[in-house]
Length: 143
Image: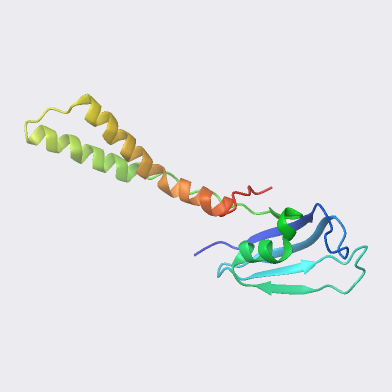
């Protein structure tokens, strides 16, 4: 299950002429990927607080309120990345070596290096997936 994350909307350019620039809203993306946005009651709006509920989390917020890059989502909470899975890599590597010893086969150095690279790739896969999720499909990094 995803974690709850807070964000703010930082408007670089006020395309609509309604909200002004700077931090114009704060919000939360819930664990089920629904989000609420609270618009700050400040000039030039001077209106009561408004709330917008959107599905699709930050992608929906960016699509509706991003104004093609004029507003950016700044994440206030960034969860910790998952730890690399060294335990599984070690167990698999040990099995690989034990099998070679049991069968009386030698281990080719080039094959071993390629195998170690593959184990490293798999051990770090959860971290790479986490980074891709945090950055999002647009490649926008959190502030």
